Image 1 (cartoon, rainbow, N blue to C red):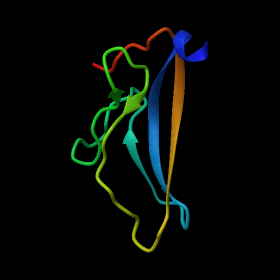
Image 2: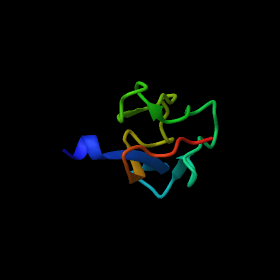
Image 3: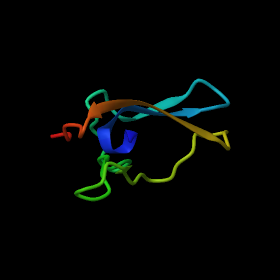
Length: 84
């Protein structure tokens, strides 16, 4: 089964304004939060889980009522190496 074989790792998380070209990087290319006040680290839900979670402060771009999140998701055999 896919869930038993692979883990996932998130990097390059970007919030985009759908009305203009504004964007904000929340997670960098190494999987680290760019600004800790805005978004916390992405981590597994539990010790034996391969599901990811994170918390971020709600925000919006001025003049826009929608927000699009885009990220690169990497698959790893078994478990991905955690961010240090």
